[in-house]
Image (cartoon, rainbow, N blue to C red; front, side, top):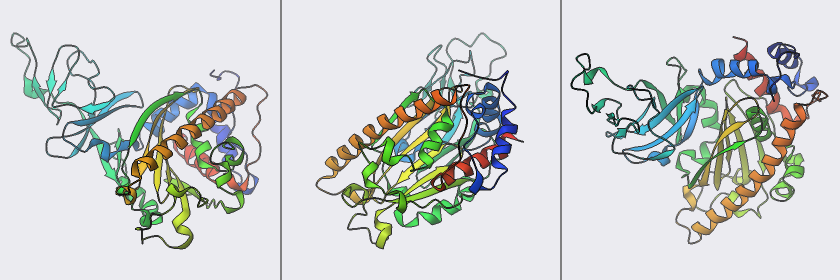
Length: 378
């Protein structure tokens, strides 16, 4: 459901929400989630200008490995080229404009599924059947448009904006926070794509607060984290985070005995990192998982979902069982989160929906709203 005609201007409504001190703040107003006009601003001013995470570099280890995605309406692909570099490009053929590569995989070259125009891994045109009689055609005139692409701590980011601030510069604060975790050396062991019936911001906010854990996740991780041990500091311009202490009974979340980088409580501290606009990372000393979100209209979100173990665990005799335990846990957590976030979207779509005051454990949600209004007000 999309609401526009009778709603107040959603940007003005969000600005009013974020204009008060956090100690008096409420949740974002319903029209921010349901308005088609607000979504159009998000696509134009956020997703088309900021960095978007397509996944982990470990999933594109060999020449020809690729990952496709859609970013602000633009089909894109990231390829490991013949020289070993990562390259982001338009995923649209320059002939009759079919999309080229789909999903994830490995390709020796990029072959259009419509007329077999064939591109090298750097995007240059290698061959085009039956084009010799067109006097204006010159193969060297054709090359897939290149996009900004950067790797940071094992994550691969793409931007449609050639002037985007470098990722490492934007996220210096994150790198310092989690230095002892050695995030580059967490290997992705699974990757899935899903579509849920909720707004992308509902799912993002759900990740940003652990206030809901004892209730929404009563059947899984709810009993492993205590509300009074959650720390929610003020966010920074490019990200927010909070931390929770995991119960030591969840062994795979603890620092491995070989990890001498982390000391004391840090050996059981989980960071929940929200890197704007839509990369959400749960980073424990033992495992990680992530969601990279992109809207599919006001009422649906496309989810890139992946995770795996720290390489500290890779040589353990029970490494496979550790991964199996992790994947089972995450699948169960996702079922719970999907139920909760889809209920939230159904509720906020009601004419009777009114946002309530935020808990101190929802500080990241307020910071996210502040970030968002700064972008859509441009």
